[in-house]
Image (tube, rainbow over all chains, first blue to last red; front, side, top):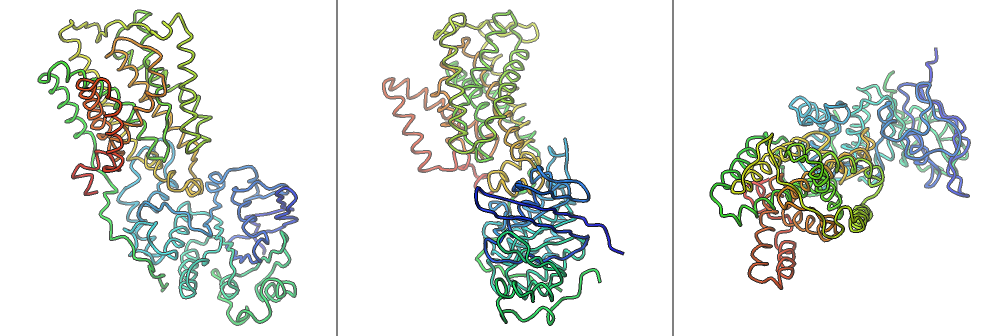
Amino acid sequence: MTTAPILEVKRLEKRFGAVVAATGIDVEVRPRDRIGIIGTNGAGKTTFVNMVTGYLEPSGGDIRFEGRSVLGRPPREVTRLGICRSFQVPQVFGSRTVLENLVMALALAEATGLALLADPWTSDRAERARRTLAEYGIGDQADREAGLVSQGVRKLLDIAMAMAHRPKILLLDEPTSGVSQEEKLAIMATVMEALDREGVTVLFVEHDMDIVARYAGRVLAFMEGRIIADGPPQDALNHPKVLEVIVGEGSFSGARATQREPADA
Amino acid sequence: MSAAPSATLAAAPASARPTRSRSPVLPITIGAVLVIAAGFAVPAWLLTILLFALFRAMVVLGLIVLLRAGLVSFGQALYFAVGAYAVGFLSRAGVNDALVRVLAGALAAGALGLVLGFLLRRYRGIFFAMLSLAFSMILYGLLVKSESLGSTDGFAIHATTYAGYAPDRSSERFALLVLSSVVAWAGAIAVALYLRGTLGRLAEAVRDNEIRVEYLGASVAMAVHVKYVIAATLAGVGGALAAMVIGHVDPAMAYWTNSGEFVFVMILSGSGSVFAPFLGALVFELIHAVATHYSPGAWRIILGSALLAAIMFVPGGLWSLMPKARRS
């Protein structure tokens, strides 16, 4: 039996003047999906992520999360509904320590009303933050300033902070960009392991096709603001247009050979 | 087991940053008691300097709340004047009670800050700073044109009473010192508690990264608005105290040079602690008094030089010279 979609995107469109950044985008995302989003630069991947998370207002179409439209809601409301994101350039508080970043994220996720006047720094919250950092493999960086740690650590912190709200959907915008080739696989392994434990639905924008083939259960291929392929990696990555424009013939080791076991299998 | 990415940059040494601070109530209370005790011992001229420093520090306390979010206002004289004129209006109506006057100054300035905050919260940087200044100049212009309010001369304020008690002339200044100290005590504790809470700490988060704050489910606009209202309220309290201390209100209270002096004191103070504005304001008033006494024609040159020296040699403000501040 097919479960109901958690996210439905219908005829989504975004225009910047005469430039069409996205058009006719239809996507249904089901709980615990692992969706890789691929495409050349300017294909509309980040525009899609920005629209789903409330950063950009679509020019047309609808985005429904658990049956209700999220159109017109600012990022903070979309976040509180359960759609969170990380960024291509990690968005952390550079002047605070890694631990303080996560404690603040947890405090903002958990405190409402007058509780926001209370000190965010509770021993319970600090302990949970340290545990989470350890799960993300950056526990030893906890007391260092976030602005001074490596890009890889900031990427993981960015994702850990996005998870503070315990989202139902997490969108990762190029989680491995700007880090060394050796760090890429380590980061994805760490992140996916942590996200598997939470059972969160994940959409990730990625340029490395080996990583897409390994971690995605489904691939959305974007080109010129449209989705040109949507399906399992072995199909989408071998779609003729995807091979021609995005993947390039023989440029990655192959979806069939490296596909990872689905998280919820 | 997951492999952790390496820290490829030489990271900062493990920080001993005191993320959880101790209760601010005791040190602030000790500070207030010391100021009141000083009132018994210091000569009259120094008592006046203490009074001026206290009302000025209240305004700067609010500026620090804004500064922590990366915002500077060059228009706090607006709220300072509103607080002062609120006392003036009460005085004309025959209301001279200290508590009522302070509350009226706070409420009038806070309410105006609440209204203007809807506009100001949309701006950052120089636009935020200059919009505040623009509003203060509008008020200045209105006050100058208002003959019923004494135009450029302003008008006098009746002496302050304390729950029915009217001190005689010999104890009037000391009573004002006790009032100012108690108000400053309450303001400093409120700000210290606010700054250690999640909303208060959000200021630094806003300064660092507004996008991340929004994507953590918090409203940047609301955070800025709250801080703006707090700063306006504290400036109003400062204005109310100033009106009672000086015994007179006039449009110069809203003039831009007054706003500049508040920013001057903020730079001189630093933003590391709620104690900083009191230290900075006291030093400012001392420099001002000494400079005008010994060199009436050149006191602005001396003040300007002091600001230059502060920026060049103590960029973190006077408070950063404190041993405890240096350790953290």
